[in-house]
Image 1: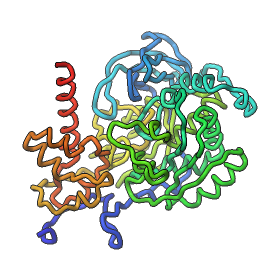
Image 2 (image 1 turned 180 degrees about the horizontal axis):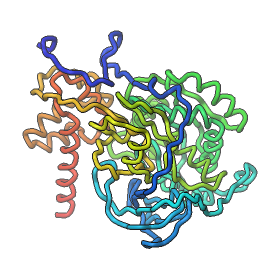
Image 3 (image 1 turned 45 degrees about the vertical axis):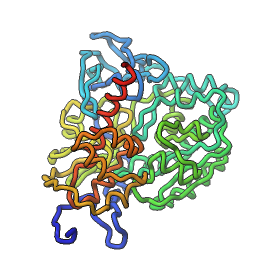
Image 4 (image 1 turned 180 degrees about the vertical axis):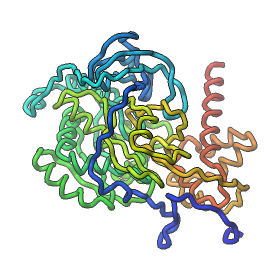
Length: 450
């Protein structure tokens, strides 16, 4: 029955003949290109919520002139992050604008004067790290507005404030398993020494027993680079080469693979003595401590099926989508994804900006795929990295049986999309899972309030 069914494969997710359900990563499009820089936008849209937790509050007003690197929004509460101006110019408006996930948040709009006037940066030497306390380093990280750059966006100062907790393993995530994305690869290739120095800064705060950097088996050429740089910087860094299979870069899977520790629903990684940070996050820590730079730009992979100017670009936070399209002469804009094509967000609004967690802007052909009823083939079960039964979630959601979704451990799903990719019936499994989670959270909150 399955063999007779005809369905259209997504172009970037073709099956490997030698390996069932293997996802073609499409990284070859940009992997061997040098780092590029995009022209600066005339207008920047800088959201006050680019992180988990509470949004920051603006400390500037409309009409005010600001300089590059100047703090324009102050973090609020225990979990929040400062926001800084990516350019020098004038605040022309403060209003609600779109985030990549489709929600709206208060946003500072800056008109670029192209003068690159900037605040004075406080640079530090290596010897100053030896004398710095954990509290001083955490303050530097907080002031720089650093959040997790792997996509989670958790404020790093809050994450690293471990108090009396003991950290057994500090994992630096360089896996980047999403198709098309090579921003982290290029960062590791070009800035290995800076990353190792950033690890040394983090080590001073976390005091872990072990430090491990995870590298994809397809990027083995990075191993010798990091071995050499680790010796030069004088850090005890283990290098773990892992299978490139998607979604190997997921935090939960990475911890299991490297430490053997299982992270259960509701558990924090710190409770298992583990902290994971993306390589981009570590580079941002280096920039903050040694260069005095707050987080105002990042490397972003711009790629897709018919993008002529594909590559990895240094792009400033707040750069709107429309500027990227116009600057790179991109004509195919049927389907635009911020992040990776498996777990990223579909974006339509031209004013949607690059934010701190934006690792890629992927342009794909829009395909009209007809969904059919589940045929219970079990393929989604075979590929689920969390050992769940995805087709059950779809059935329970359609029938409104939300308690059964909860009992089937829906919150353990990491929404990697592997189940939907292999489904021959094209059942919208991820849509059912996401909507089911939202409904359950609402129901749980109502129960708590009552």
